[in-house]
Structures are given as C-alpha cells and as structure tokens.
Length: 204
Image (tube, rainbow, N blue to C red; front, top):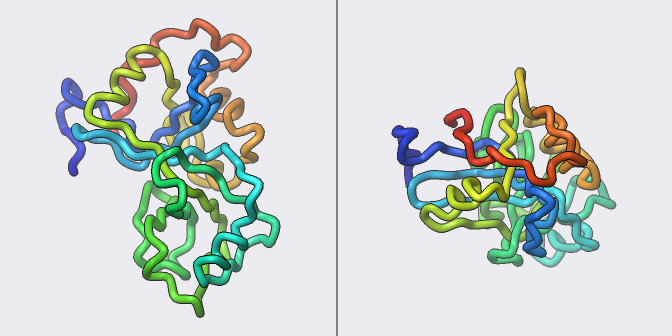
C-alpha cells in the first residue's frame, strides 16, 4: 500500500484526526475522534481514541500473558468495530517495543503484541494508549464520507493549527472531541449543518 502523490486522486488524511459531526449517528462513531494511521488509494485504517471501555488494560494484558507496566487503573479504548479482540498500542517510547512503527513525530504504534516478551511487558515509561479493534474504510469510502460532511479533519502537528502528538496520548477521552474541534477554531455547539468538511486537507 502506498500514498498517492496526486492530490487529484487522493488527498491523504494520514496523521489527521477525524471528528464525527453530530449528525453521524452510526453507534460505532457517535462523536468519535479517529486517528487515521494510514490512508491511500486502497482505503484507510484508523483507531477511535475516545471510546472508553470498562475493562482495565491490566486485565487484557494478563489474559495475554504479558505484564502491564502502565497505570493500574488505565482503561482500554475501543479502537473500532473491526477485529475487536486485536490490540493496538499508541505510545511514545521505543524501550519496550523497538519495532514500533512511527505514526508521526512523537507518536508510535505497536500493531502486534506477538514480539513483546513477557519479561519486558508493555509500558513502564512515557505516555501510552491501549485500544482493541480498529476502524477501516474501503477504496473511496472515506473520501465519500468526507464529501458528504460526516467528518471534520484535524491535523496532528507540533506547531500551527491542530493538535500535538502529546495531546493525542494525554487528552481526556471525555473532552477529546470538543478539544480537537476547538484546535481548528470550530465551536462544537455550532457544528450542526457545518459544510465544507470535505475540502482538501494538507497532504501527509
């Protein structure tokens, strides 16, 4: 899979957040904030960041035979409706998974736990967010949803308009939707009927 270099074919949403508009009533994505990890001509892959489950991360990792070294009370997030038993970890440290893939500066993704040794475990330093499942779009699907106005795109950047990688890992799930929209100057209370959401965004 590769990202298109032709903006007329694909305007990449990789390294953007997608904030669902209030009119999007799909129960999987109501007021959700989705990190788009990959978007190209073939489709898109992302993780919902603000859907908290009652399950603690330590319970999941224990069932996998791995030690959780993060906060004891940290809860799992539901990353999306696809493969809801598969774990993904967003974090900012290579110490426990040197094979983690960079999403952007300051943000790494562990997409498989197979290579994590029980002795090392998961976490222990830095910021970390554990999700189960992911969100996926087929060819052209996310473009159609953007054009119809289902999502607002928020860039992840270290300066300028948007949110930082640090914010992605630290923001409270309860306020993430409002804060992400506010980062690009949108008042969530005035979002009903918002148009122009499908306009081109900065290329990744």
